[in-house]
Length: 118
Image (cartoon, rainbow, N blue to C red; front, side, top):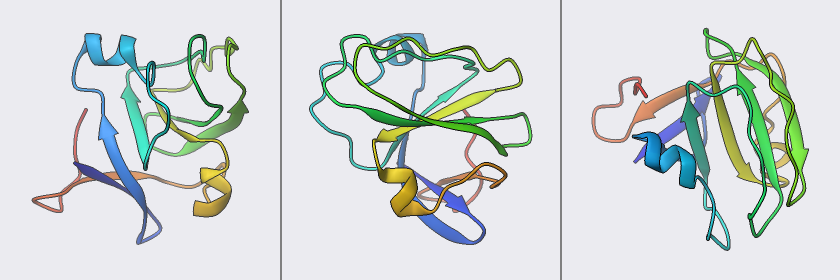
């Protein structure tokens, strides 16, 4: 398990997609999500087949949020060409966490406290 951290505060626990199969599966067949799902090397997402709406944050190569959107179920997103990764969470989570465009987000490993890599 990892943690999303921004400005020295923990936003949420995070599940990182470790491989292509996990990236393809994403949040399909889930009824909810505690925390966040992080997809590295990603520029666009969809919610086709998902059971709940999501918040999505696109991060650039410096892990700065460059775009946030809320997506209803069964939608195709528009590619964000400058994005390097995407953070997904249940709709409304970013408002609760205070996550906004311009925030720098770190992914910290649970055990070492160091920045995790995807």
